[in-house]
Image 1 (cartoon, rainbow, N blue to C red):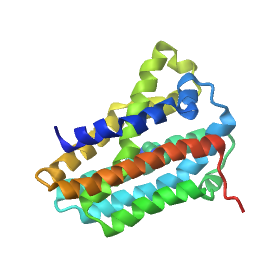
Image 2 (image 1 turned 180 degrees about the vertical axis):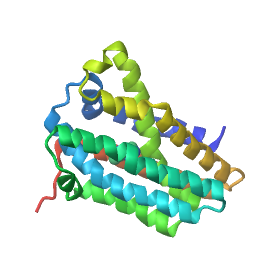
Image 3 (image 1 turned 135 degrees about the vertical axis):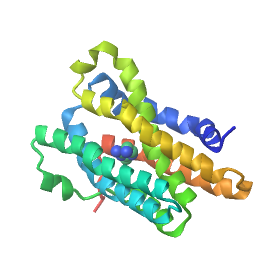
Image 4 (image 1 turned 90 degrees about the horizontal axis):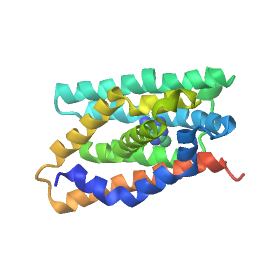
Length: 223
Ligand SMILES: Cc1ncc(CN)c(N)n1
């Protein structure tokens, strides 16, 4: 079994909770209130600004030009494809680009990105990839599941563009590269090192769940 197969098997209970979360289900059946989705778009926009920095750090830590190029592409796609979708939804909802950028991250949003940025700056490239992978991989899984669930009626779902993007082959290709990159880097690594990587993967998967719940319940700073 490859290392990422092991990760995927062990993370199953947490990812199942993500798939069942009412926010994710609400995107899937199109019943999520627009106001809740708009709140998520704003929080996610500032999350992605920090997330994109992880790819820049990945490019710095890469040991060959090909890997460097993939991280550069991941950064480019995050800024120009994924965040463009956020800008499109925001403009439909009457939210300006400045308003998006000025969004104050909630405690969970900040804790999640700070955790990843800390590991990215202080850890190895494999630690960095283990941290950022649940973000890409869990969304790809959600996208594919919701795309299949909607079938022909997808165009009637107000969140169709969101579902299509995360289910797309382009998004999948980037995610697949990260999966293969981690398998290559971990090949032959001792068990104690793999356990550190698995802990990062579990921690950021937990943060993924907490992020969904945070945007659903709109957990702001208490004071
Ligand atoms: C919180 C979060 N996690 C993952 C993704 C998918 N890149 C995202 N946009 N936002």
